[in-house]
Image: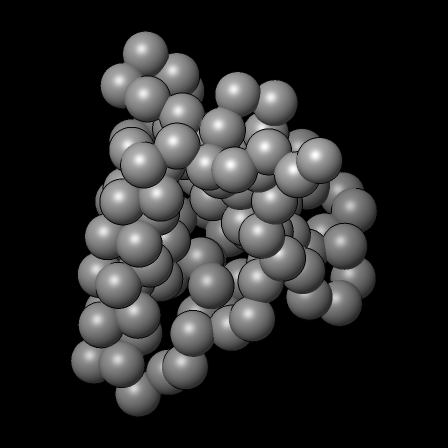
Length: 104
């Protein structure tokens, strides 16, 4: 069957997405649609893809002992970057305009 997210992962993800959506709205941008999955222990992962191999991934661990991070890669020549601190305003920046967010 499908593995359900933990209460912690669900609560943290909702909080991050809510704050990210507010940051995007403040800039008159919309929250893009993403693909939501669970990991093997109940953590959550959301992937946002756009053309030319651009991806932003939000991963929220199943509990406080599991890693949470934001990964972003903007194009095939980009090796990507991982941020261990999940900051909604940074996530919003990456979701808004990937070409501008690269390297910042």
